[in-house]
Length: 257
Image (cartoon, rainbow, N blue to C red; front, side, top):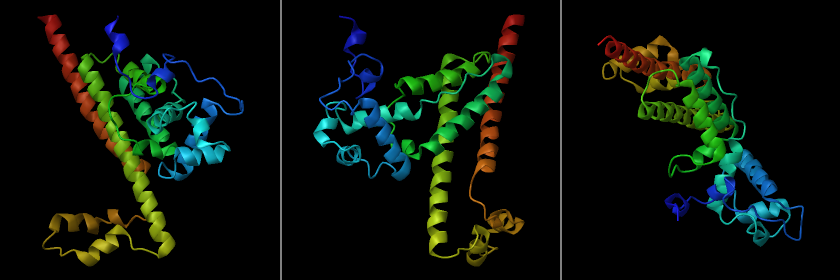
């Protein structure tokens, strides 16, 4: 037997790739796998993963919990199917003439949109590299942007992981800060970060931080958002550009030699 056929796949992956027959509709044809996953995504988008359970899902669909298990084997399998559905809007691949940097920047921004649309996706622990068809299509899109850079295969994957990690962190940070500000504003007015620091800091003990406070950058009432994301993204891309230039220079030297 082919060794690949014996590889154990995470729950739901075989179903997504057609390696396992999709469950047939039972005696109640109004229930289907697609409807179950769509409802699960709807609940998670509105309330997060906390309230999502097989029993809650069954109740919202108007069926028994056991009915759902005809279609979904476990909660872990459901999460895998939900992740694939959340990533269904795969961006149109960039034009090679666009250049690697604009292409990667667009990929990062569209990934941020995905996490903002489905923030619960950030709550699912990462147990390994992506295997869902749609998530792999997103990876393919990112790698396409790097096709002409001269980077080695491992470096291309490293770039994709670096940017994806940056976007995930920024999406999580901005979401948590926005939620915290909303909770505080509903309770009572709060000072800006700068106002709070002026009350707490001793300028002699924190001279460098105090200089930043006095500059006024912490007096902005607006939440952490796109401007901060774009600043960090450009710095990440600057580092990648330095690597691309280094590899290009090395390749040119080798050709001359």
